[in-house]
View 1 (cartoon, rainbow, N blue to C red):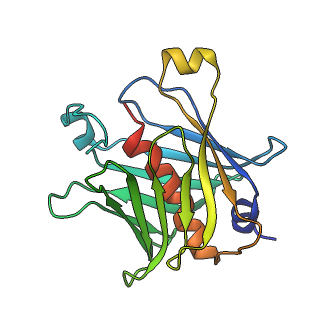
View 2 (view 1 turned 180 degrees about the vertical axis):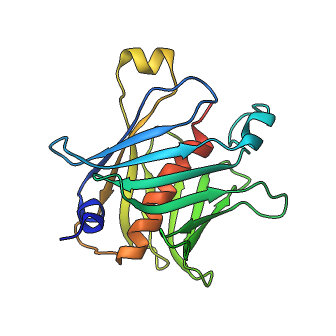
Length: 199
């Protein structure tokens, strides 16, 4: 099994955000149920980010995140640029080829929603959460449950003094999404934290 498959086949996948000062680069460790490291994700700071004041959530700032396997080999890149027309994030492979897009949708009700699309704009999955106390549900276009993203207790010190969050990405046992859908959903899980939870 390749390193890519090890990361994508990990059930559940624990996403641990390392502590960072406000407005500093974000780093994540991806672990399996036994606590073994199966991947990392590192944000590359954009100069434009430092020019943007904190306006609140969801964060409007751009970002670029590289997802690596346990051998520090690049698996995919997640990029968000500033746009006043639409909020769409690109996900590309190590060769720069487009794997798909993640589009942010903010209904008037305040639900947090993201569309996961293939390069042609066809919907592959939808992620929606009413608030941070409830899981972020992941459904396919037909409404079948693919899994859920749940925020985890990060410890008293981190909860009181910081905004570094931990998540559990759990795939439903009765479904088996395609590998590209899993890649894009994993990228969307990182985007969820950077957009809705980043100070």
